[in-house]
Image: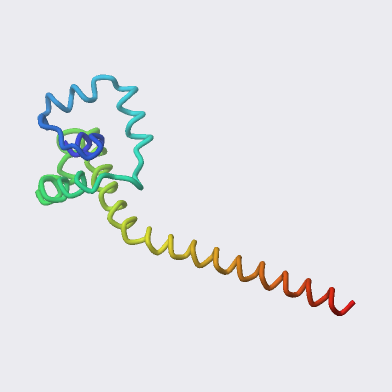
Length: 126
């Protein structure tokens, strides 16, 4: 269910049953491409909130317990948990990264201005 929620682009699917999951995974190649190409930096907030409230809050939603049922289920469970955790950390880091990029740009502009002033001073000395 967690994979379905993440891949639904913020719209929580109505059918989160095993049958719904099997239907989504019906085309294995397409399903794997979706997992591989998942944009973890733009995970829908709604999907993360839903997973945290309805899945991660359950004791049974962990890779070790899933492994007793299926290796694939354990892997998908771990993937879902890690995507949500990554996205929560990314939400904290992203604004800091943007501020750093802005500061780097201001520094570059200041360095460019200083180089222009130095060049002008050299011209005046000649």
